Each structure stands twice: as C-alpha cells, then as structure tokens.
Image (cartoon, one colour):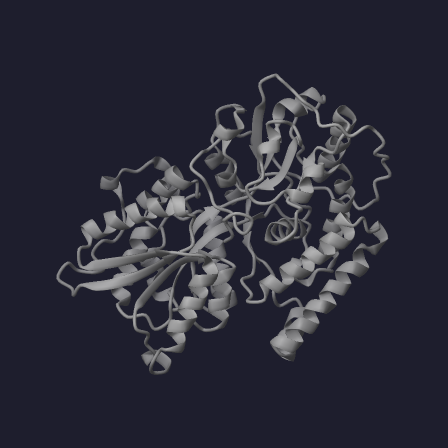
Length: 479
C-alpha cells in the first residue's frame, strides 16, 4: 500500500485536519470541452483567512471505490519460530497499537475498536500464544516507514518486548525495495523443500502492498491463513475484511494482512471556492468540471491541481481514476480506462500550472491559492500547521478517511511488473496531457501502451502470463 517517501511513496504525518464530507455520485463526461482559455494567467492572491475542506472526492460512475495505500504485514516463507511470530502479529494488529498509529502517524485503523482511544490496559488481543516459559527467540522485523515514524514504531516494539521478554525483536527500517532483495537473499539460501523448507531467521515485514507482490510471485511468503483468525481484528472494517476474502480467492490464501491504511482524499481551499461563487464541494465529475470553469473565470488561471509531474505518483492517481470509471488500469484500454482518460483530458484544460511539478506531499499551494482543488492527496502528506489554514466544521481527517473506507476500497494488484506498467502509463500521460496530444488520440495511445506491456510480458514472463494479461486476469482487488 503505497505511502510517501519523498517523491516515491505516501507516508502519513502526525497532523490531522478538518473535513467536509459529501456524498459522491459520478457522471461520465466524454465530450471534448470547447472552452477557450484566453484570460490572463496570473496567480491570485488573498489576505483573508483561508479555510480548508477535505472530502472523499469524485468516486466513479460504476462504483465508489477508494484506493487503499499504506503497508501490509507479511512473513518470509520458511521462517522459524512461527508461534512467536503469530504472537507479534497479534500485538501489531491489536486495537491499542492501531489507535497509537492513528495518533502518531495518521494511518487509519482497520479495527473499529481502535477508534475509541483505547488505553494500554484495555488492549485486547490473545497474549497467550507464546508462553513465558518458551525459549527465547529473535524476530527480525523489516519496515519501510519514514525515519520520523520509525522512532514511534521502535517505541511500540519496546512495549511489546517489555511484556514478552522471551521474544526479541530486531527492528530494521529501510526502503521496500531493500526489504524485497533482502528477503529474496534469505530465501535463496534456504534449505530443504516443501513443508520442510527453512531459512536462517524469522522474518516479519511491514511493506508496501505493491512491493509485496514481487515476493508473493517469487514464492517467498508464508501462508498466514491458519493464524488469521487469531491475528486479525474480530471487528474489522467490512470493506477491509472483503479485501482479505478477495485476496484468499485470488491468491489461494492469506499471504499478507492489511495493517496500516491510508486513503487519498481531495483537498480544497474552501474560502477560494466560495469567493468564486461555489457554495458546495463538487459531488460528481460533471460538477467538478463545471466548477473548474467557474474557478478559471474567477481567477484567470487553472485552479485544479493533479499529481502530474510523472513517476509513481502520477501512475497511482491515474490508476484510481480508471478504476472509478469502471476500468482495469493494468490493461490501459478497456472502455472505463478510455472514458477516464477522456474525462481527465477535458479537465486538464483547467489544471493549475503547478500540476507539472506536483507529486506526493505537494499541498502548500492551497494556502496561497495557486490552486483551489488538490485532486487526490494522501492525508499524511498534508501538514495543516504548515499551511496556516483554518479548519472547517472541526471534523477530523480520520473520520472522512473512515467514511471513504466504508464506501468501498480496492488494492492495486501486486504484480511484479507494476513498475513497467507505471512507466508505460506515464508515457501515455506525457503524450496526451503534458505534450498536448489530441483528444482523438486517446484510444490509440492507450492501445499502444497495452501492446507494449503485452510484448514486455511475453519477453520477460512468457506467453502464458502475456495471454492472461490480455484476457484481463490481472485486475484491481476491489470490493
């Protein structure tokens, strides 16, 4: 589940803001906008207090799914001391730890009980899995969180070790790609085969949901199905439970557990919106496009921002839009994919000039009204204190994130070739949006990228994978 390290992934921060939540209904807009952007392009300035609003944003014509970011818990195949690992996982998924993550980092709990602010004495999980009389063992716990938040995680581990003195946890925080390569090295050095396969250390990881796919398809992950009922919350948010059920159906078992959740939201300078005569947040795509025109007329410049500087952040945002239009982004060119790109092409006429440099953690232009709408940004990336903006209606970002989770969620399929897909969708984005391609090119450009990925898979993964890809076998884990 993606999370920011600068320009690569989206990490939550410690500040929560205020929100306005609205219901979302999507209307596909497929026609070309014939609006002439002829007004002088000058950045508006304002001296009045600026109020910030955030809501789940346009959801999609066929569903109200929201992209889940963050990390999953997984265990390296062949790890020894699985009972101790089970005890550690149960603790990390407990309501208290989930609540502490919310307080300290902004990650959204998947356990409904965690929203009650439980104290340590109320922490409810099975603490008898690994007896105090059992041998002392060491778990190597690899994480890909930001360095600042790693200090918090170390504190959580210290609390665990104070209770379970015979389970030592060696904590290593490093990039997800390093976790992948490290686990692969231990797996390559493993001994035995089948159920007797073993590696030299017990490895637990909290890792981005995309990077975990490489390990799954390499057969490097332990099947956690037998311990899921002990480890996972009993009162899990229903959409996350459905994701787990879907994972079981697709992958034949539970190989990773949704742990730290982040949901991208739409952020708006509510003051600037009202100054343009717009009293309500746009509740569907048609309204967003209409408001984009109104904002341009008011300020003489595009006021919709998009994570469009290229790379993984742009690919992630396009993935979300395509799913919300009922598409399968991995294939590039099914009906929903094309409709999503047609809509974005029309909307791009009203993009802020800032879009070409915007990525994860871009948000400060809201306060200066370089843009009025920040289209999809991860909550933890937005430091409301740094913005100096006032809050609206005194409702927390955690609540609107929970609302989005309950409306429906999806995970990006953790295929090992996701980076190649990102490169190709970015190429389509550059051709159509950045370089000013024509609306009539959209279907052909996306079909070209489909063919490019097919060729890549055929060359690197074989004809069966390529054929399965073309038949739509790889698709979002959506509930």
